[in-house]
Amino acid sequence: MIEQNNEQIEEELIDEAAEQGEVLPDSDAALREVEEKLKACEDRYIRAHADFENIKKRYEKEKYQAIDYAHEQFSRDLLPIIDALEIAYKAGEEATDEVVKKINEGVGLTLEQFKKVFEKHGIKEADSVGKFDPNIHNAVLQVESEGKESGDIVQTFQKGYTIKGRVLRAAMVSIAK
Image (cartoon, rainbow, N blue to C red; front, top):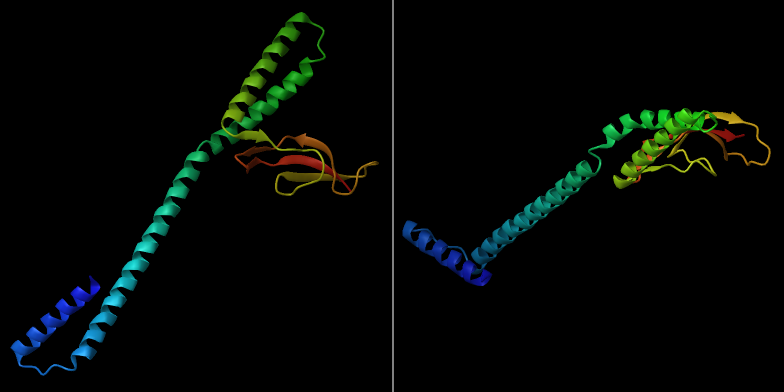
């Protein structure tokens, strides 16, 4: 097909030159020139098409990331509420009054519902046991601790959370010196 196009172009050039009374250069040289121009055009087309495909893939990836993390800020805003419910639940565990026990039971159920909804949307508690990881932990204190190696987490002050592998909130911890 390319050869047919080349022949057709060559014939058109010859006819055009003959009409204008021009002397044509060597037909092989003219053919090579046309072929070079054709190859240059094909190369530009291939590059432009590849660029277009790359842009299309990048936008598709960005679209899915935007969908995956669309509720990230809303989830971050709910974290203090979960913290408050956990504090209330722990405080109510030691109660002796029946009314307070029932309220505490309701707080516990509400807390569990929050956690189920978070799990449904890919939000998980960050692991706060073992070695300190600066990607998911925020060390606010270093303490001397027997039985713990340097860099081990001693205490967690505030739980951390991740959303589909991305840190939503870093856990505030103390680490051993």
